[in-house]
Each structure stands twice: as structure tokens, then as C-alpha cells.
Length: 89
Image (cartoon, rainbow, N blue to C red; front, side, top):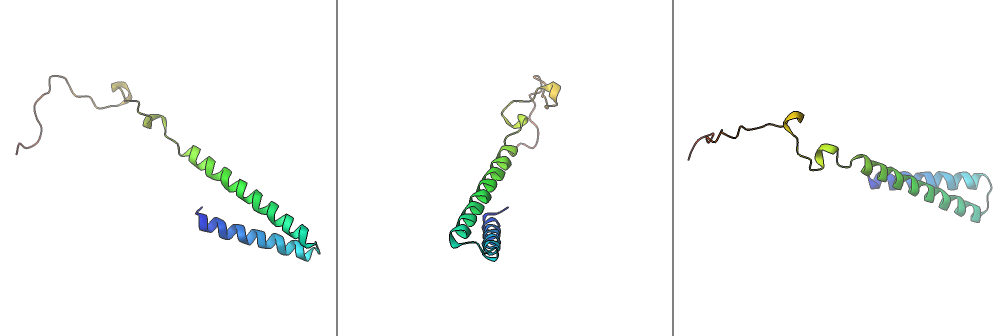
């Protein structure tokens, strides 16, 4: 999720919470407190999702610099094959 989508969604959710609180005949202090708590919960949730995405997209075992051996499927070149390949310009 991109940041603009998150900010728009967060603003809509906070507006719904504020409207719900107003319709519930809550005081202005309660409306503000509910909106702030809602914003904090959404921000913490977004942070945790981003951390989970970063951890999941971390380097895989094969990408950590470990060279493949012949048994793992790496291409090998015989030591006595020193003839150049391709055209000689």
C-alpha cells in the first residue's frame, strides 16, 4: 500500500470514528480522544505491516553470497579448456 492511499484511508477512518462519536452524543474531549487513539492504532498497524513486508523481502539463502558448488547445479569449466570462444576482433 502506498503512503497516499494509507493517509487517505486513515483520514476516512478517523472521520468515521469522529462522526460516530458525535452521533453517540459524546463530548468534544471524548471525540478528540477517540480520534487520537484511532490514529495511533492505525499508525502502529501500518508500521508493523511495513516491518513484516521488509523482513519477508529480505535476502534469500542463495543471495547471501554463498557460491554454488557443482553438486548444487553451478556450471563448471574443465581446467584444461583454455581455448577462447567467440570471434577474435
